[in-house]
Image 1 (cartoon, each protein chain N blue to C red):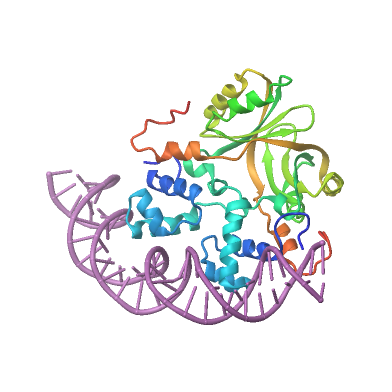
Image 2: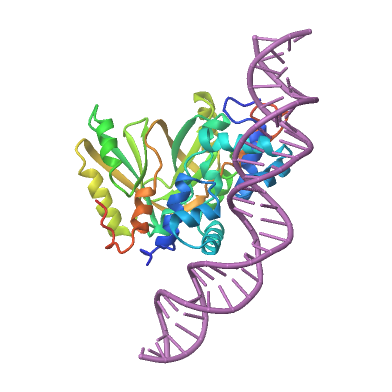
Length: 166
Length: 166
DNA sequence: CCCGAGCTTGAGCAGATTGCTCAATTTCGG
DNA sequence: CCGAAATTGAGCAATCTGCTCAAGCTCGGG
């Protein structure tokens, strides 16, 4: 059964295998997970189509010459969120934008070539009509690399009681 | 030439093809990029080994039953960053932790099943020795989905003048 | 300008994998 | 208990992979 998501334990096991071998063959995945090749193929195709996020997430900005990462929070004029978002989408260095709760409205994930470039990108964002004020937090260090295997393993376990994360 | 990164225009073109077809065959990639099959294979193997981030980044937490995303900022007792980071790494719902500049020290990317669960996760983080105070910003909406193709396209273009991002 | 290291190419080939169909079986929810 | 959906295993032609090898190209250093 799924824990309120769309991925069941079999899919979770396929995904765990893919974290270790992203370009594993369908046959290899089937063998490791213990399902038939046809099932592996069908499930993989379905996850590629419906479940998995874009491959772009695997491309580190640093390898493209953008080693600086920063989070810019922004307060936005009321009711102009959508047009601000549209303007932000035209800035190549903006990777992702979340609308968040609290005193500021947006969390903007940006990258830059260096400190000067970050200044330029931040200035460009502040210049967008509707952006009232911003604050930039530069990422100094990655303390915990992105990982989701703990949650994947929870889903992958057969017969597990709900959410015993400790 | 590379723009200060480790990926050259040919690699960038391979990556662009992979954003459209993540499980494309090496032969298909070679054809689309216009390089030989051996070269495609060698470059792909090298990027899988040295360049690309983990496949885990493609797994959306929501499909595992964690539809809520939040960013928790935390101020930490001086000199205890590493042990706090180590403790955070033991919390499955913590996906990623950045050390940032400014009045707070950490940006913690977490997920939760629902509001109650977020409360529990935030409480668990605040309970870590060395975490002095936290602030939770709940993601209400994704305004710009993660994308890096604008930067990839810049690198993929042959003969382009430096960084004409506009 | 020349040279050499490194990269790329195309050919080749045995083995592996894929994409798909199909009938039979199993699973699971109503 | 029943029926829909999922899974399985078999099968097969087509495609792909992994790798070697020799030849050619690119590019940086001397």
